[in-house]
Length: 335
Image (cartoon, rainbow, N blue to C red; front, side, top):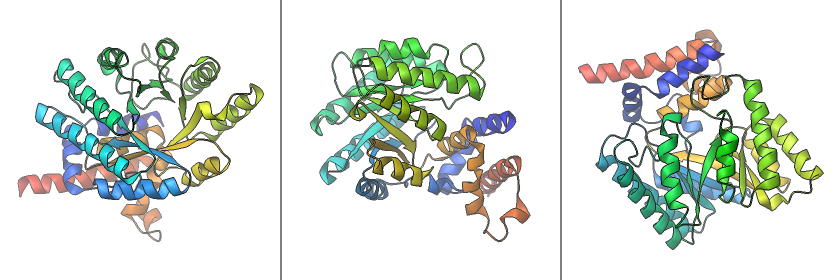
């Protein structure tokens, strides 16, 4: 599977593919994992999840932001969905990416952009704002901005990626902040990150246990792995850890029945709900994390009757994705 994972990661980082997919609209299975391209459809999705006892964190999708105009537009979209959530009285907060807010353009500009979001979030019932993890090359810039913001705001937190060798130290640095613990979704070198599933899982469990025993703030455990979830359930039982000190998180569109089951068992549960036109990079990273999710793509490309006839393997599906979007984009480009 490493070759398939690398392929999808490469697609997620391809600017031409991302721009082409944006013009097409959600396709190739993405509509099953992206709530919608607009705020109205996203609010509707959140309301339905709230009815099942599930809160949401909303991600305004965006890749390859290269101008201040794009960054300011993203900021405005984030503020608008916070306002809409507040007015609708629904249980949701936002997850933001600093690359989308301009960190690769100007750090001070990004800091001001993010600060404006947090100020607005305070107006909207002090709504929580999560700063998402991104590629390792952006980590220093992200933590520098977070370090400034956490001294002024009490409604900001971030994400710890378990595949990083230094994840424990980063996590301990922010023991007073609300954190989301994840395995990690980007491709990093062996000098930076663990490379095998076994190593990453082992470190992930180590982080979770340490965090639940020592943290001074809320913890989000973001995984679809039932083995890890069962381990956490037994661990909190054995150590008498308050269920209100943590939650489970999953991505919208994946293992939904399992999410409902955990919420019904009385665990705090939040669904990570992405929305917007910039769906391609996000979707490719989800396929890279778990290549078996290519079935989502197959179901949209082919009918149940014909899908086995056309494509049977991960490489075939990846090629279909590449050829379909690439061909349409090139046709439009040359028209």
